[in-house]
Length: 327
Image (cartoon, rainbow, N blue to C red; front, top):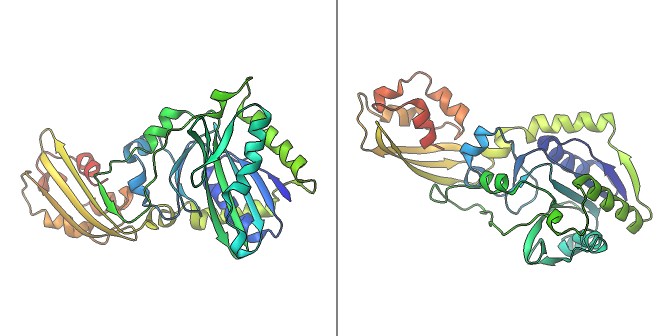
């Protein structure tokens, strides 16, 4: 087994690394890695339905889609991620208990009574500190999980707070769980990097054939290319979302009430209707026509509206008011 040392905390690079190693290495692999503050959404999720768009925008938080299914999670440097990539027979590749076992063994060593619960969670005293997901590619499985060690919980809750009334879709909604940090249950103080070292040491003991390696400069170049072509693109992170209907009502102090109703297919607005008690100089169908066929993305909508004076179509309304209603 290869234990690949990881140092990069860029979420786009780290998610691309998993796919690259899965598809370009032949040996079994184990990796530990951390992301700077970011939101990681499951492969089958509607990204906009999972995140607090305003909070994400204000705090410049990257949103990245991963290869595996499951729910959306917030990462920061207090969260440690682990990845197994292994070869095997197709019918025996999915095994959540097998891949979480080493983590539980480490925690038991340091006196933390953690256990596997439900479909894919690790818990302490009934509170979740690890969610796990898997992805199959040919005869290889990618299993990865989060380990909340010292994450900032208010940020986690705020970043993943989305208005459930905005969306009606067929994507997989994340289940908000009661969570805890591992650090709250330790018998002696330790930081996340010391915890990482404990896991790495345990893996080298558990797997006598384990070899520690670093990714080569050629590996880095190819991963950066994958970031550029896929993991840093709107098409993968947002456009890949399932079809959905978006509905939001905004009440403005001077412009009245507006209701936005959108149908979105593959990230593209296929139908939009704007209702409300607003006044206008010109027919708002002009705006609806301009936005039909446009990506449901702030930059694309801003470009489509660049030639319009919003106040002509929605009296006393600013472009910022309008944008707040359509996301």
